[in-house]
Length: 301
Image 1 (cartoon, rainbow, N blue to C red):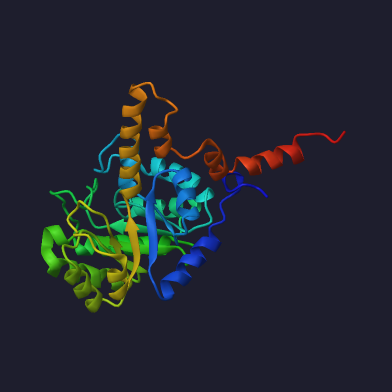
Image 2 (cartoon, one colour):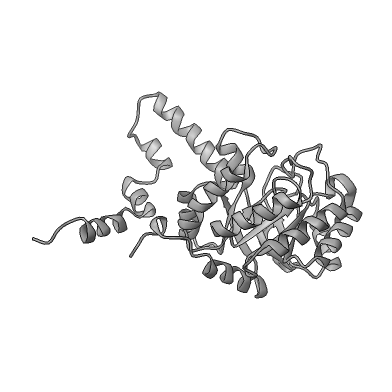
């Protein structure tokens, strides 16, 4: 068997899988990742999808989440993540990296790279993290034109186009409702309601719009902690967890570095934090590579 990392992108299967899940009961849970090995962990843990987080990717490259990465930097990482897993990958396409024409190209690039879904937000370019202060929005008219362009640009109707609105912090719930209804009329597949401040607000938007909702669930931002079961009860179809894995990994590395400074490189404390050498190699598919070496690189005697 050819390992995922060495195969060409097979996007149709994961896209169809996500579309079926969106039409069914339950909620799609998508932890945020920034690299292929984390994507493998998410798949092994039994989640339904993977979220390629733009904010997490920015931070992994040493930048805050304020729109400093280019589209090509995002797409390059997306290709590696898509190849590493059979799960659908929901990708953060920010604002589409400019105006409607920039977005047309972005849709083509994300689609070619294998994304099962992308979300596009209504902030000005460059954007900010949805839980930062000082966000600015483009007009409803400009955003609907951008969504119209995005929908026309996709070639595979199974790739979902999700409209994100950051209006809660700028225009209040009235703005969220107006924008969500306008975006829904364009024919997008779901609405990403960013940074709601209560479960009641999510329920309100769900009652106003028949479209499926995507909600960003994590601790520390503007949205209070909400359990996935509560969101599912209100018809939320996708829940992303953008930053949790990265923050856990960063804290674990801090602990590991404290131990390494003592010189105890193989002690019990650091082993508690560590995946074993063997398990790491299994996760990354070394056994499959070894089988290929036996089959293709060694001549029969």
